[in-house]
Amino acid sequence: MFAVRGCEIVEPFTSPSRKSEEAVSVSPERSTERIGLIGAGIVGLAVARRLTQLMPDAQVTVLDKESRIAAHQTGHNSGVVHAGLYYAPGSLKATLCHRGMAMLREYCAEKALPYDECGKLVVAVDDSERPALERIRQRATENGVAGLRSLDAAGIRELEPHAAGVEALHSPHTAITDFVAVTEAYADDVVKAGGSVRLSTPVSRIVQRAGVVDVHTPRELFTFDRLVICAGLQSDVVARWAGDDPEPAIVPFRGEYYTLTPERTSLVNGLIYPVPDPNYPFLGVHFTKRVDGRVDIGPNAVLALAREGYGRTSLSIGDLKQTLAWPGFRALARKHWKMGVEEMAGSASRKLYLNRARKYVPEVTVDDVVPAPAGVRAQAVDRDGSLVDDFRINHLGAVTAVRNAPSPAATASLAIAEFIGDEVMTAIRSRSA
Image (cartoon, rainbow, N blue to C red; front, top):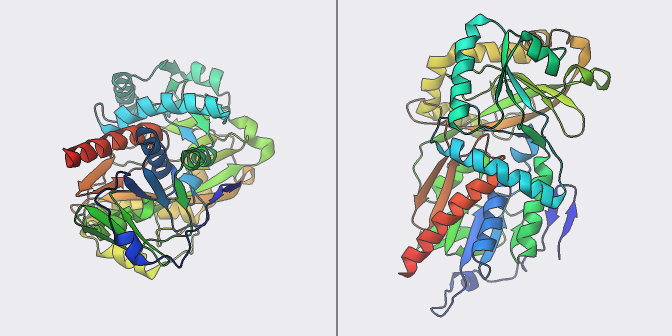
């Protein structure tokens, strides 16, 4: 039995009196595959769902330290279903986003979940941004993004009467959804298929031995034949427990938002984005319509002083020490300190923050917005300071570790699950051969 309460799935614990030795013992005659997943966000639960489909007889167990699913990046997501405009052709992001969007649209229709193709404008505010906008159009075309249109200033105003710009790229099939609701549905599918979602179960240690993986938690020892790590903001830490390399390390960036007041939501009909700086994986401050009718403005990207620090004063000394100790962060800071200062200034001043937004919707004033909940992006950074852009998935023995899965991971979640599921099945067949 389980219950859904908001975004919480409650699964009863196995009795704490269970002996660790029982988890360690492996019968030679055992034919049931035991698969563990760490992380009850949208990627972890999508993978768990896929594995229950591929191996209906397997024991699939999802572990998460939080008391609810989608507690971190998924639950602080902008809700945008990306069409694949920006990603390098042939990359995992481009391939899996394109397929994942189609799969997610079908899934939302099947489950009666909200899905609104409100469309997206990427806007050049002056002539200097036209070449970069054209490069995005070319890349999006290579990625198979359907229905693209280039618009002049009059075309922009036809779709977004309050927007400003000299040229824009319109993606009519870019959509919005409720990714927490989607994740709840994935979890429901997992449990209905016989899997288990174990919340309030923090992992403290991982040991690979003799072809199996021991996962230690305060209450129980779990032994799995395969383990998939989808730990988001903690992905590098958990992967290192399993024996993976330190690189890339997660550097957390807090994304702060404002929301238009209800009487001013009419200023925006859909999604209005800037032409992004190609030097960064962040898309810049933009306007995002939500499925509940709100319109968010943001996010910026400021260094978070805690991996799960959603407030401006949130601080974890341990997390901060890890960030500062990583050579890649120091290299990143030396190279991009100016951008960091600008982001911090925008964080400190609502006026400066909104000056960016007003380039695209000039009528917005400081009286039209209220602060909204922030999110934290798990940005993977290599040792040389390079920001990891594409999805990165490592394999080590019986463990698969998702080391980098930023946006559009939510959009691509079902396709990522297919990709990882196929790799897990290949590993299992290879072991059995």
